[in-house]
Image 1: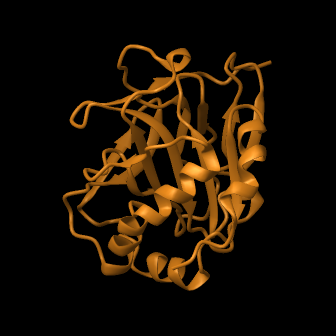
Image 2 (image 1 turned 90 degrees about the vertical axis):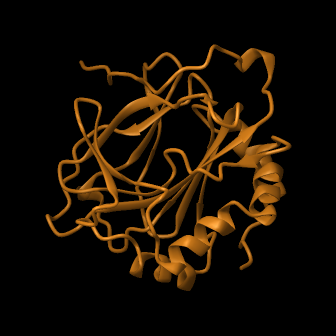
Length: 230
């Protein structure tokens, strides 16, 4: 597989983007590869899904110990490969990225009608690997997804005073962003898609051994935030 853009050419835009370093790349992967992943994506009623339904999230995440179809498994392995790591290092300027072999919180995700994920900053520390979480990569798999279905990924500023970016989760759209204590993101509004459709994505998280002093904090779990009203 060959990634379709030059990461070095996107680096300056990545670090300058508002409200924190991120990039949206359409058609990064060959359509055929993602069509195979979508065809073999775990079904909604598969018992291997871990379901979350509370005030902060209504979604499903896949248990990394469960079996996956070959196309999905191979794609996850590719996202953990040296080629992908080097691409992300050139894009973000963060050297020494490390994938997570345990896929903690990563892998296939989906949300059905009325699903949501409130705005949050992610956990910052991998307790098993003892590494700092630095980068999120999201690949969307939603063909014929309409604006009115919602499910936009929202990126908010550190003060939670405004939404700096709003990204529709279209098929073969990839989003990469820095993970810090103030990289607030989510899709907080309940989905309005048809009952027989879901918002599907593959997520990957990347780590380093250490991080800049200005980003350091005590290890913490996910920090959820309310969207301001009025």
